Amino acid sequence: MDILKIILIAYGILCILIGLFKLPLVWQMKKLQVMKKMLKGDRNLQIFIIVWGSIIGAIGILIK
Image 1 (cartoon, rainbow, N blue to C red):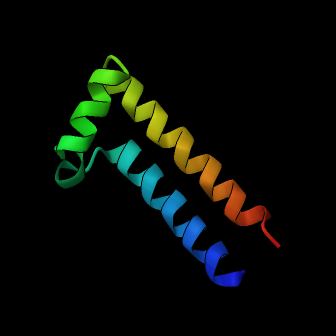
Image 2 (spheres, rainbow, N blue to C red):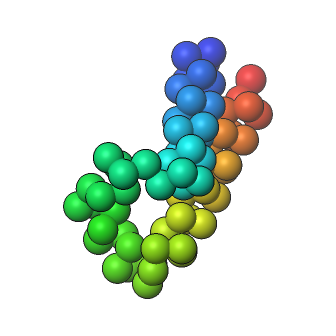
């Protein structure tokens, strides 16, 4: 369970960093371009990624 906890926290932090700083290497991936169309904008995708990272990080912290 400790490994899962560490992975979830690291993934959450990574998502938050990608959402905040819009890292070009990741932000220009085709998968994110499709999600940008689905969420109708760059800003909405950024908010989605930050919220997703926050939720995953919180789950990682709460796991015992």
